[in-house]
Amino acid sequence: MKKNHTAGREKPNHGTSPARSLITDLVSLRRTLRRTGRAYLSRLEAELDEVTAWASERAKERDLPKSRIRDLGDMITLVRKIDTKPLKGRRRDLKKIDATVGDLRDLIATKASR
Image 1 (cartoon, one colour):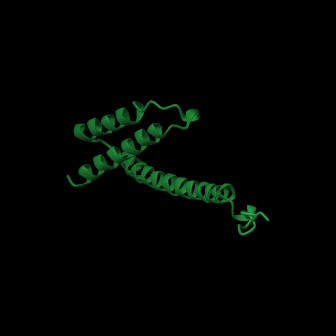
Image 2 (tube, one colour):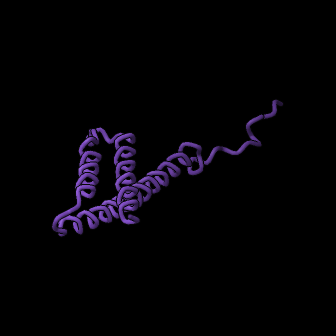
Image 3 (cartoon, helix red, strand yellow):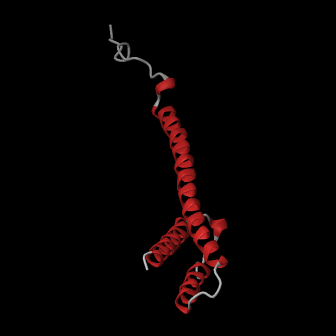
């Protein structure tokens, strides 16, 4: 009589198959992406709020010194020169925005220390 070589093997459980495991991991990755994206956007918006508050204070001032007017002009140039294509959802566009917001925060920090 022939021995059945597959008799000792267990049939794969489809509930724990690699494909199902991947699907579970991808769902988890999607949740992580959304959570990370929300946190990233919240941080950037908070930094923009900080720069906006600083600019609002400058807008209330009368007779700004020429150096302050020049600084504000530099900041306007920084913001206007960002070239993005939001509908494409590119990472490099987010990097440009992040870098610009960082530059603006650096500018207001150096202006505050004067």
